[in-house]
Amino acid sequence: MRALALFLCLCALAAPAWATPRVQARLSQSEIELGRPFVLHITARHDPEIEVLWPDPLLLGEGLEEKSRQVLQEADGDLLVSTAEITLLAFSMETRSVPAIELVLSPTGGLLTTRVLPFRIHSHLDPEALRLRPMAAPVETPVRDRQLVGAFFLALVSIAFGLLLWRRGKRKPLAVTKADKPKVDLPAHTEALARLDALEASGALEKNTLKPAYLEMSEIFRDYLGRRFGFSCLDLTTSEIRSRLVSVEGSEEWRSAVTTWLSGCDLVKYAKSPVDPAEAQQALQTARILVERTKSPAMAQDRPREVARA
Image 1 (cartoon, rainbow, N blue to C red):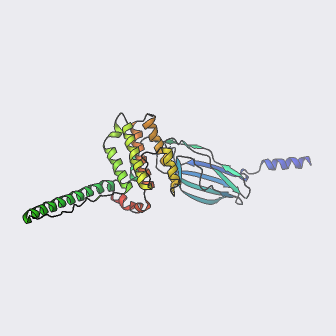
Image 2 (image 1 turned 90 degrees about the vertical axis):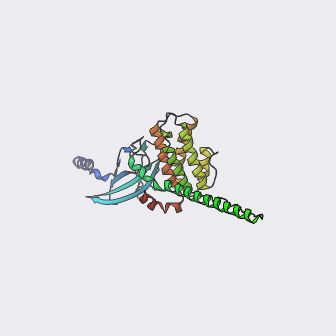
Image 3 (image 1 turned 120 degrees about the vertical axis):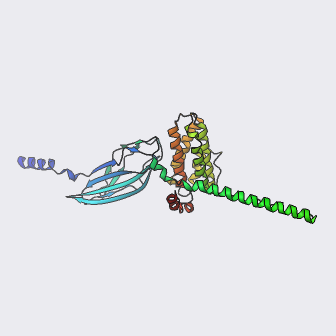
């Protein structure tokens, strides 16, 4: 009997390792660029009778956002391998890691937890990131509008001069109706992107003192938010703006990124937080990305044609 008990104990110790579910996680890259997608790979090995339940949405905290995911399963001997490829975006320079992710095992109710995955965010611009915004449309539209207004003004002057000559010839009073210049209203996102382009071209982001550039960036983005969502942002604090955006449908997808960016500008404007030209350039690029993400869905329909033309 003792020999049988000893034999059973040895069999239990020699049980295959695959009897216990395991999980591994890794990032597609350790150095992340702000606003550019990267991939989180999660692989779980488990018994075929166990189902892995993936959390939806992922609890990533501020500064990270899930854009898409793809989950695949395949057999590996007596095991089933469940793999998820999750595309993420980082929108804050303060974000340093992807937090641990908990997977629920059904029907046992057990948990598999991934490890925290640290990464580093670039502080400089990558040339490919500039393709996220249209370059041609914001520049061409204002030029055409100025030409149209100039032509209309010349036509008004010609008509007024002709009426004056006709009135003097007839020697009769003639009431001339003044025509107002047409007001050309650009879409809020088009005007904001054009103003950001002008700020970048002015060289203000390369000066030793960057506080004026951050003041201008903040005013441009706040003015855009006010026009886009119908409330004045210029005199509101960042906290008050966040409270207003809570009632905006769909804002949960980008509200955290917007308030993080505004808070960063506040640190430079009011707390005199030190920044260099590279960080200022990155802040301007992030503003462009946020304008693109929050613009009117009707305007977003023209986006493929604008990108192709740029």
